[in-house]
Length: 287
Image (cartoon, rainbow, N blue to C red; front, top):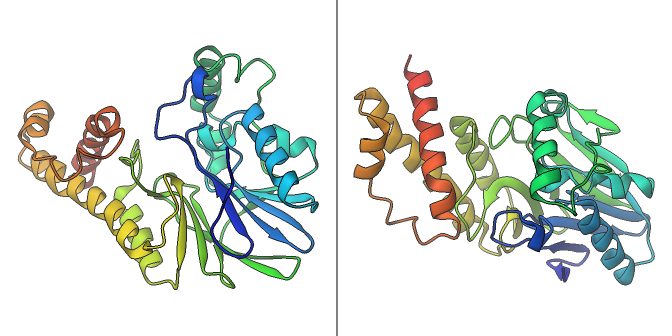
């Protein structure tokens, strides 16, 4: 976990392009941080308390400033299971209110229960789901130590509660899982139509550096925004055609040319599920 500096005051750590496992401590997502004269703002909390503690230690080696704020891009497990470590040092946690539905759901409870088995000992009985201290509904301007952060709702996209965090003074965007780089996106039960619209809105912003939720940072933001967008459009085009024609999914999937994307890491782990979920979504949209 070596922090990489992407602008005068913005840094991030890069998770592995892998599925979560005991061997990698669930270090499969990125987390960012911005150092200001009055404290450090962290974006996302990583996938286990031990990882979060390592990140806190790494930040402490770079600056004596305290961590005052954690902003969550969304409430998926690989981004939030480290929250309790930040809560223990008194950080103020900000997230979108739409995450409350997931946080209080059987899905979240059962996911944590499974993670205690699948990711032991890094996720255990002491690992808990931590709610935000501040739930926001729309755009929020946050100023810490004279540094302006624009917290911008992106959802419903990858999740209903997606947030992107923009630092205008340095033109750095922490995009969360609205942007994937160097790996196949995880679509899950996303609203891909609105996700594409969210990417279109980001394409209109003055961005020099994007830190995605997964993969290396990008100094070619348009190219990398476009890659995620093109993948989602292709899923909707191919699976939408199959749904309209009432083709069986297995036949449609096999007949689709995936060559443009199959070189991406985790393509074979994620793509079939992405396609199936998009097939179901397109069936729903056409009814």
